[in-house]
Length: 230
Image (tube, rainbow, N blue to C red; front, side, top):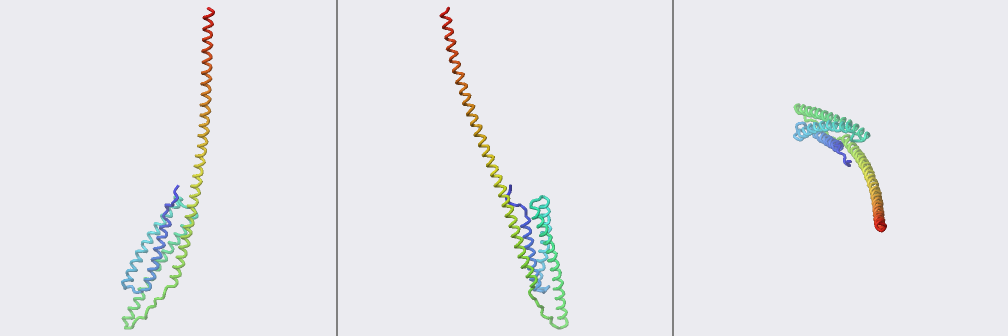
């Protein structure tokens, strides 16, 4: 009986969450730059695109892991139900990240075009404000707290499974000890029986030897009597 789960759900799900948080941070940094032609802006854009592609692949593979767990029933039903909920939520969050990336790209391009038009008319563009995205920070903080709670729930479920497995293993060891005790008792009874039978056979042998001795004496007496009478 194995005491370790070989299910890769927890590890892969945490990997998806880390990548999603990294993409949110990069999107925020990119939004603060607001200069589509800047080198750092282009590098962040390429990194976000690659991250979105990787996250999309990881989420799809996570669905395969979930389907396998459901098919082979490698986890309790309540845990599988929670995984379905987590996967649906992760899929929705992936769509939100993609939409936020697309919207920010369009907004930055429009802002850059507007600035270029003002420059062509000989007027400097108004300075672009880059306020801190408070809502994004609040969302990230809430998600981090939720991830911590989910991690604690997963840890609690894992500890519970290990405790159940340890209890089952202890019961099996106790059963095996009882079987060994019964076997030892049976062997003691067999040994006692063998000793008893051996003793009985010895008594029979001694009894047979005594009868043979007396028969020999009687035979000799009869022979002497015959000789005398003759």
